[in-house]
Length: 398
Ligand code: SAH
Ligand code: SF4
Image (cartoon, rainbow, N blue to C red; front, top):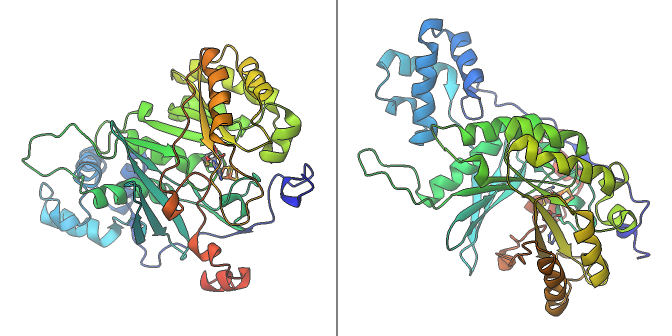
């Protein structure tokens, strides 16, 4: 543990270059990412009469989020003049898919470009009974969890609500999953679940994540139930209660250690909000959000946090919290300072938790061949080890 990356004195956040958001220059307002209230206000500000505004919101909303339409000219229940008015003031814009890779196991990874030229990754994971989209909330991450590839990326920018909900929409484009007018309603959905487990700490971009999820959960349009959305946090305690009351989705927590000494090294935000403080916030979550269980994510690192004693401590710590424990075999990345625990160790750990009465699924690494597994995401520009100066220049910042 003499390694710099695992030193307990490592800072909670890294010395990042925070990228300002560059707005498109065409002066059009993007409809994607506006909540119903914001869309109503924007339509009125552009000249829609107030008395018609609620109806227009409903119509536009349905075209954009139910039918997946991107062209105002196709909004056939609106008068031609109103379609022209919309086109003159608004746009329907998604982040752009740069590359799409498909793993041997069917996992799809999209490299997506957002305004300013920065990139995030989005991963679609098909399973027997569901299809999960893992979306990003930031370019990079300001936190420095020592086992996470994203945490080594020095470039950080919050995604807008449009860029967050846009990831769901572009995946639906790729999966061919927008409904066809007149066709019988298809209840089986390829994209049935969303996890905020890609790049970034979602609770450091709370408002945009909340707005994007409110759009995704709206009863018309994408209609993802709050029970099919899981937000994962490293433990930003002050925002946990708001997550319950303002989003109400399932919560996952990157727990990863059973003593403060070890968690300080693995998840440095623990130095700000330690295990006891975090657990207090988690105890209140299910009551506030009416959700069933909290997922404790636990990355299995050989010789670091994977002993029987750890498993027993974990069970004691979470006593009384409706929980499931998701064991994540460590996914390696170039230069990572840890190794994955071996399977017999992971199974022994899982067994102790299971016998204590908790579900303890071991997460199967998916899409490893395309670097799509948990913690392996990092913007391709960064992976290519371009200098900060080069990246800043490309982003038009220098
Ligand atoms: N920033 C949020 C969400 C993104 S990470 C958070 O930290 O919770 C999604 C999960 O993958 C987290 O539990 C994270 O700790 C875990 N993870 C990160 N790097 C990993 C790696 N190399 N192998 C396995 N899991 C990893
Ligand atoms: Fe950020 Fe989560 Fe990675 Fe930690 S594990 S560095 S919080 S993305």
